[in-house]
Length: 432
Image 1 (cartoon, one colour):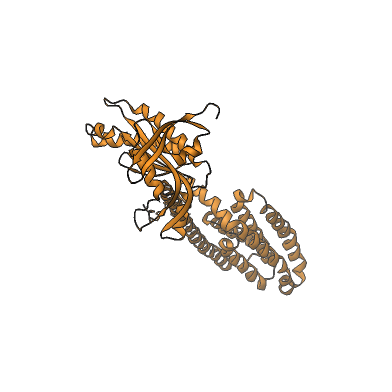
Image 2: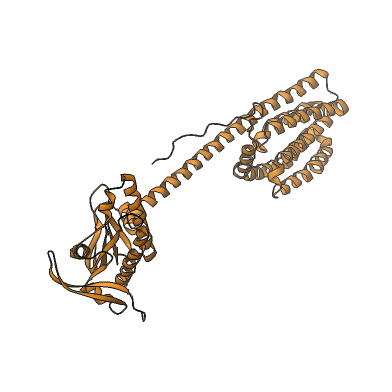
């Protein structure tokens, strides 16, 4: 399993404006672009531009002489209220929707002031103030984050405003008028190119962020699949220890209860079944056993052919013998529903309680296993038991006798252990 290392291609954009052709994608970009790049930046940049533009009234005193009062009236009476309104509006939620119109209003307020002052200024100061408008036209994408459309409108309106003042107030030579108007248009065009480049780069960054987000989501999905697979093989505590410190893991337990179960009659039945039907039948039965184990908090250890092994007490639970008893009785009941073949099947179960060691060893194909004499005796209880019976040792009987009924089997010879007293488990006593 692995994460696809692909990079999302750049979606189609409009040739002039660099906006995405897909309206939904464009809307998603605009929302993110405003939050990450526009909102805080323009609030700061417009505030700084306002401060310096108002402070530049000192400049009027040096270049305009007696006309400075008129220039200050224009600068402060026109620009100050507009700039304050813009700065206040930039703090509202509506700013996200109207950021470009607000940028245009701010830019036009600036050029209205400098072109108007230039129009009433002496000829020596006319070109100087008009050149300020030329500079401001180029700054639209930088100060106010104007896009291509807004920058183009800003340029055209500034040029028209210059022509209006030239025709009504200053009356410069035709050559100067044409030259300055053309300069505003050309410089504004450069600003539009800059705006387009900035917008296109921001969209590339947006797509890169989407690529990273997509890959991270895919990575999380794959990680979750891996975690689920590991937890299907190993207990969560063991999986965590293996991830932090690979190597052999072994824990001793003073007392656990081990269950072995074997499907009686399945071998003969499977001889007449296809391999697929054999696996399907076993999977159905063992899945039922797994559900029982999960509901009771029992650790399934492994299956070997048609044998099933589970242990209680590995999680520190004190009633491990009782939970294993409930599972064993549940297995006997549940296996009856699988008797839909010619030959009936049954389950033979053996249980023993005692100390054990559990852990993981080796480097490949990890399996959580349990070792010790307790495991061997539980296995012997299963192999020496009877179909449909839960065969338990004296140690397990001692823990359960107050709550469950038993049928004494007496002493039997157990391979490798000699004579042992054993019992067949019955359901809970009514009093219990």
